[in-house]
Each structure stands twice: as C-alpha cells, then as structure tokens.
Length: 366
Image (tube, rainbow, N blue to C red):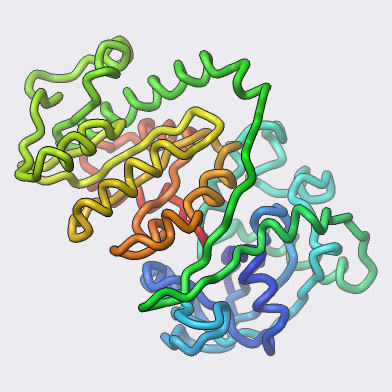
C-alpha cells in the first residue's frame, strides 16, 4: 500500500463535498501516473489556495475513464477516475494548514526548511505524486484524529469566495473564468529593480537549459545585452533571425516573447517570465500568438516567483484568456516557478534529458 497526493482546488473541493464522495478524478494527461495506483492505495487530499490538508481516500477500483460531469457541471476535464472510500473528509474550517507546527515540523519535505521559502512546494506541484510513506502514515492518522476531535482554523469567507471561479458556456464547451482584482502592491513596486534582475537570471537559466538540451534559442533584441552577462551562448545557438514562415504581424509578436526554444524551423517551447505585479503582459503576448495562429502547436509556459503562483492562475482564467478560438489558455499554458527552473538546471544528466522533463516541474490550473 502506498500514499499519493490528490490536489483539489476550491471549486473541485466544493464539488466533491456536494457529491456522493465515491469518486476522485484527474486530467487525461495524468493517465500514465494513474495507472501506477493500485486498489488499497490511499490518496491524501490537499486544498490549494488555502494550503490545507483535508482528507484521506482509499482507492477501491482500477483506474477508468468517464466523462460524466462530476466536478464541473459540463465538459468535466477530470475524466481519469477512481472509485474511492472516504477514510476522513474535513470541512475547510477543520482542514489543517500545512504551516501549522503540528504538520510543518513533522513532514519530511518541510521540517528542515524555513516557512517563508518555496522549496517545500515542490512535492505539491501535481496530483498523484507519491508521498513518502512516513508522511502518508502521519497525515492519515492526523486527519482521522482531526475529524473526531479537531481544532477549528478560521477561513476568510470573502477571500474564499474569490477562489470559486465562475463557469461560462461557450459555443463548444463550458470554461472556468475569473476576474482578478487590481493588484496595487507598493512593496512589490519598491523592489521592482531587484525583481527585474532576478528575471534576467531566470531568462539566462532557461537559455542555458535549452542550449544544453540541444535547442537553438531566441531572445528579444532588447534583452540580449543583459542576458548574455549571465549566459554566454555557444556559437550559432542564439538566433539573430527567426526561421519561421509567418506573416509579419505574427513574427513581430513572437519576437517579443522572453525565451524561445527552437528545433530546426519550429518553436518547441515558449516562456514568458513575469516579474511585475500585473502578471498580464506575458499572458497577453501568449494570447496574441494563439489568436494569430490558432493551429500553432507550441508548449507555452509562464514563469514567476512562487509567491506569484496564485496570481498567475487567477489571471490565466480571465475571460479574455479563457474564450480564445483555440480554447482556454489554461489548457495550453502551464506555470513554472523560479525555483523549479533552478532545480531543473541542477539536474546532473540534463544533456541527456528530453524537454518533456519539464512536465515534472510544471503546474496547471486545476
């Protein structure tokens, strides 16, 4: 018997509570991981946004696919499913915050690191990550105990309601949207110079990773002088002209994207690095690209400090990004934290790895 992570957003958490609680589901991209799960394994449930542990589910079936709406009213994306038996399910007020000492000081991936850092978020990037057996047993016992005689942890209902994204019906499907409030972060503005320098380092690191994997690179002309102070490209690796056969408007849009990885005459991955409080300009460039070339098959990524993660997820579900002809941007664009890029750059055998290794580091809007 093994323990695995099951991530719930507030919207899927509320849907689960309102259901018979006998099924859990995952996106189709997680089918391969789901096939490792065996009957009797246990899923430890974690509520994102609130960063709380709330449940234990025992797997009672083999994996199967079913698109009957369960977590969304229609067009439910969580079609890779298991039948489950609830061992413990907590209301959000009794769900246990991960930074509570009773949890933080016990888990193997948190107990020796500071709470203000972001290293601890790595194991929580994706559902169906296998948990350390020690962590799984501890969390199971704690959540069972909390259900029987637990502490109440307050929840700001106004803030919580902002996390419950709204769904709208398009011609072809139902999509989740959000309308984020303006972010007037004066502290962030004061430190913008430092953040810009950090973003240049990440831009350089992405170039170095791509170069090591055998890709050619593109940087906006306006960024090159600063980036090459952090990364010296091998001869012929940094392109002066994009080898693409698109119209001039599309080319101009592509040229402004922060980092491109190219193979021969095709873009493989595109990265926008967000260091400002708005998180908006990079997403807008990605949206422009998808609007101009809806059939273009490129992996898109937004990269930011981990403390901007929730802001990225909120912005990417704005109506303007959710109602594109190609489909919601959240289905084509994933999130990468600065820390995940640093971790990837330190991979010992990076030169031998395929770019698909990014799937182990990226996060998607749930």
